[in-house]
Length: 228
Image 1 (tube, rainbow, N blue to C red):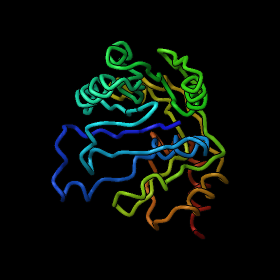
Image 2: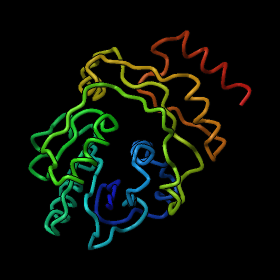
Image 3: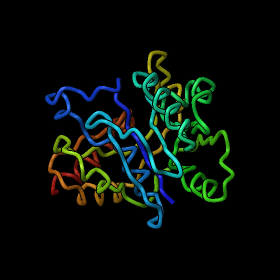
Image 4: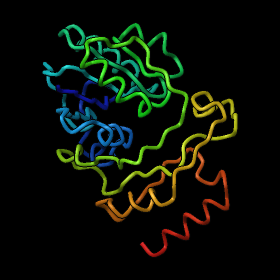
């Protein structure tokens, strides 16, 4: 079985080469790649870096959707579905406005995709893809993100790492509040250290929504990073 994952650009035109050189690896894609069974043929296209093929040869296409890429995401999804390939959409925008996204997809993921990814794959194998996969639980897998899926692209030499998910604050201007609704989960420190040791690049960018929610935990984590 073959699954294609897509990170869409804002428009169908590949960005100027100078802008392309500033793109970073999309961590959410690497997390799903790490959870995908090895027998699955998994491919990834980053439209920010290259033009997409006109035709896709896949059993399922998954597209991550942010508000600023929603229009392009829907355009892509409609085009791929016209080829007879089921499309699933996920991401913050889909979680916050699922009814809009459902009009352009065979299925949508509301909430955290890692928590439903294996169920979704099994449903595709069985030919019973559900219209909605919902998961409000924040899940950290023991499996590390698989960054080998980015091999074809030349991103900035920095690895994105996440040590926690969510934020207890309910700031009305922040999408995080709408997605996580005050929920927070911390990742095991040993797992974070293991991932950082496995990273190819020296520079690390932490992409937690609020890494200093718990100051004591943050201090312990930063202290543990000193010897690395």
